[in-house]
Length: 265
Image: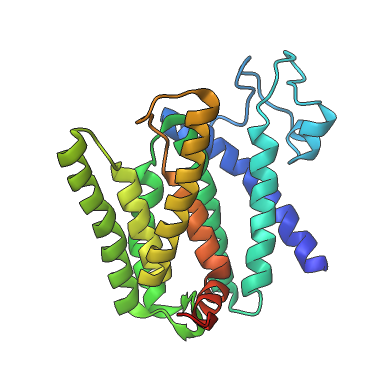
């Protein structure tokens, strides 16, 4: 239990840094300097006002200096990252510490991608491109197959997953643009799926694509009907792919076993 509490706190602290990345990366601002500041008045945030989750509650979601409302996104990201850290620990805590660290960084990257894509409809190359060689190296040496955790993913499966993930979405982009005369898939989504394939293999690509497409379709229909948006409204796909990747990572083995155990398969 102590281990889970420590990891939860660590996840919340790192979640605070993720908020910095989410705000600054798409604006081309350094994520190191200057220190955290209020988005409205620009004044530095005092260390005791920068305690993850707690400070937001104590300050009632407002800046101490100017009184401006602070987005609920900040504690949400901190809490979400903390919960995902605990989930990764629960799933992979018996594995090597290095594997645990890799997956913790991976889920944090997916959170940053999700919230940047929701606001700006972009997935920064500074997040996805470094993960491509990283996923191949660790896929060949340490990453387990998320659907058969006693087996090593291996370089071949990691490479096939990367090519199939990036290649599938690249083809969707080409065909979609030819048919609809506009971009059907962003370059960031293509690179993200290449990373997912490298980390999870081709089976992870299939499950991630299915879950992402299903969730995206449901949310898209809700947006259209509840907000009376026109058909063809652009909805960022990265958050749904990130959701599919998280489900594949944390529950891929159980989903596959459930599917194979059905009597009509």
